[in-house]
Structure formats: C-alpha cells, structure tokens
Image (tube, rainbow, N blue to C red; front, top):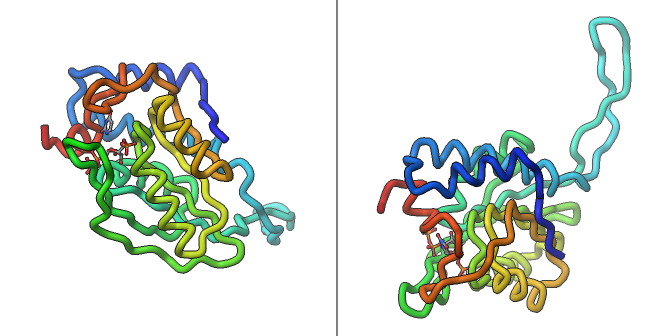
Length: 206
Ligand code: PRP
Ligand code: URA
C-alpha cells in the first residue's frame, strides 16, 4: 500500500528541499518539517485508550496512545527525520538499522542493527528520506519482520516508482507514505528530479 501525502504545504517545502542552493542547516529543518506533515497522516490509525484528565474547571476523559511505537531510522539519512517524528510520538522507542548502498551495484549492505523488543501492540515506523530502488527499505523490513515486528509503516520524503513497485511485490502488507512520487531513477539509481544524496545534504559531506 502506497500513499502520497499531496498537500500544498508539503509541495512547497519539497521545492525548497530539492533546491541545490539550500544549505545543510535549512535542509535539515525542511526534512524535519516535512517529516511531521507526512507522519501526521501516516500515524492516523494509532490506537488510543481513555485516561482521566482534570482541567482547571472539571474532570473529563482524555486519551493516550496505546501502541508501543518504535521509530526505526535507516542510517544515515533516516536520522534527519528522527526529531520530526518524535515530536508527534515522544514516548516512542528508537531502533537503528544501518545500511549503505554499494556505489556500483546500488545493492544495500547491512552494517548495524539495534532494535527495541517487539510486543503484541508494537508498531514499527521506518523513516528514510529516499525510496529509490527499494533495496534498502525491503532489507530493513526483512530485518524488522525477523525481529518480530508484524505491523510496519514507512515514511519517506521522496519515492521512485521502482521502489514503490519493489515494496508492493516484496512487502504488500507494509504501508508506505511519501511526500512525492517522482519520475524515476537515473543511470546511477538516483531519484529524478529528486534532491541529490540525502545523507550528504543532511550531514554536509558533499
Ligand atoms: C540512501 C537513502 C536510502 C537508500 C535508498 O542511503 O537514505 O537508505 O539510499 O536507495 P535504495 O532505495 O536504492 O536502496 P545511502 O545508502 O546512500 O546511505 P546514507 O544514508 O548513509 O547516505
Ligand atoms: N539515495 C539518495 O540519497 N538519493 C537518491 O536519489 C537515491 C538514493
């Protein structure tokens, strides 16, 4: 399942993010803000439970999130989305999957994995700005499923049709939310029009 969060505020911020003149400081800020917009939509099916709340005027019934939410940024670029999503679910735990695409083959290589324990109500929310070939995301979802996570939602900032189709084929049960479905990939498997290398732009390693 694949959803584009099509909203004028997202489209306008995405244009700033794509602009090659945007420096790392502003790039990180836009990534955080766009993550909040997309997460707002992606997390709308979280379950809640009632709690009593005493306002200055009376007692009422409020709610809190019932699921154990585990945020899983894919290293490195996913770290740029972490603060944004933690604003919405501050009680979430955080796990990390480290993958790097080989520069020649574009195949992902895993170099790190540290995840919280999965419980019956757990929801894993994978964050990575770029869904290109889908290799990194599909491998991350494999890791999560092997570690007991059965409910998985993904938030990306940009996606290519190739990555969307790979996820539909390999993990049709996983919902992927993105800010834009771009046109495709270039010969180096970079998203077009895209925004370049997300990790390099977030961390200033151009
Ligand atoms: C980027 C990006 C995704 C992956 C997407 O990471 O953040 O994880 O590429 O490409 P794919 O869909 O073809 O797998 P990269 O491997 O460049 O590592 P980095 O985050 O450390 O820069
Ligand atoms: N990774 C990136 O950072 N950008 C792309 O366009 C594709 C993969």
